[in-house]
Length: 413
Ligand SMILES: Cc1ncc(COP(=O)(O)O)c(C=O)c1O
Image (tube, rainbow, N blue to C red; front, side, top):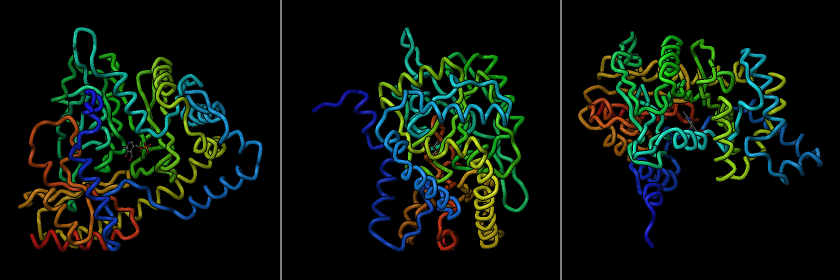
């Protein structure tokens, strides 16, 4: 059997697929491996109690339960969920949106696949237009999503060193060259893998540039406000007709219910809903059903700020304190300022081995991390920095054991 170009592109073993496979095997072959490599949100008892309660309420109401599991929704999403969500965003932020500005997808990962391929790729006359990531490191999950080859381009950040072994990336606006080959600009904010939150100022500059160029600005808000609010800097979400804001229910603790939604202008919503209809017919309904009343009455907003955010902030602070205490003044070592998300980004400057090699050593020693090189989608430059960083998920139950192994291993190199 010969696969089509699409078939080949989406089945070829990319570096990250191999790595994920390797991580999976390592985990299943040893019980005592510390997994700091994955993207799972933490299990927070107060939050899981809430999901249990909602499931019980839904199951005990026989007629609505039968409808949830027994009926397809329209391709743009569940009407009740969309209505409640529109009202919430209108009231909270004063955005002038209606039911025609929201489309639900089976997880926000799906939304990115749809958006990237709706907006970029091959145009008439064999012209290829690209998605620009103005700041790398950026989310690994964007990397292989283009149906056409070379659909992404990106640029290196400016690095500012901060006290206490911290640093921060910013967008290099002086290099930001948006030509006619750029179809849209995309940022995750807070950023997976670094925990960076591009500043309000950076965001409004990007917004202005994109509006002037008449290309959409996609903001991936998987960790941001109003939920899950894993955000340690004050920043108000923004939206206008040129912004595509992507939201996810995964990091409030529901990743397996595969629910995300975008807020965008009507043309984008119609396009995403059409692709939804063709690819999935309809969306998974349970996540929408569980959360709709909690979005409407503000519970989701409140628990995000009062439970989810402090939970992660405490874990992030503890991991930073631990690492700084163990490594400061011993090696050249920096942590990206933790402004949000569930990850820490560690930079071992001038490390004698690449972080891919470090990954192998750490795996042998019982801890899984992700080497930095995978987080530069669209950046062809073989920048040394790519091979000096790692991403860890700081929120796992055995983070401290994992960090201890990382410190010991690094100090022996
Ligand atoms: C920045 C970012 N965007 C999007 C996603 C996709 O999330 P989901 O498809 O679960 O909504 C993730 C998942 O980890 C992420 O970290």
